[in-house]
Image (tube, rainbow, N blue to C red; front, side, top):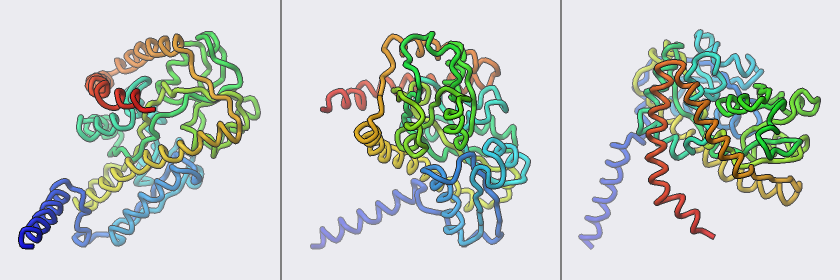
Length: 361
């Protein structure tokens, strides 16, 4: 009995110490005496996983801080348009924003690399790079130039390859298409003669319906089903070579960030870290149900990219991404870091996830 009590006490004490030392406990917000009121803006609309998830971040910070940091979130087009979010937070008009780095490609030659690169890292690998490979520090080197602080705050996981109304078999089938694909994947398609269009989420379905664009990639089965893309396009392509694990971000006005005490800063960091995992987990679960519904109930025509075309896309992606990164020293620095870690992750995956998935039936 004494031995059992001793083991229980030791285990409980050790667990508490481990959690505390890992930084998982929320800070002592009672020490935050000054109250702050922030306005947050999002590049995403209210409906769907991302709208709810970013509302949750703001609500949790407000609740856990006991009002020491009160954040009110406005979704896309409620206060400003989706692609104005970056500017209003940079200027200090608003204090916090949510989006994905490739939405701000015009701001920096290297910022899109932070969303992910074609044939790059999946969610697990991206998170490892951000938290353990210096990724957040590298991101801050870009964002600080715009008076912003960066946090990973979500991930879509592996995306799908896009919705088309014509089959894509040869590289020439991309030529002349008017297609929505943000980020570096869009840059790759441009090299094949695609007219790449960047549209915010609410405009995508109307644009396809009116013929303004021929097709789109969005996120994955859950989000795509919710948006109704199966109603306006014939073919659903996979895999999502262009976005294997796309980073979603929180960015904070640097002046506002610096006014916070350390406890509130830690609270934001922990809430963003939680969101990074929670969004990826929800996408994974919902995609698993949604893909069955799209296939079984809506009879969507799923098409896998031909192997030879994927090989060519991979080769072209390497060229395009390297040329893109070489536009400035910071871009090269970030890409070199990503490539170094990707090689390590691929090597490990051959012995772990890849080997296991191949063996699973």
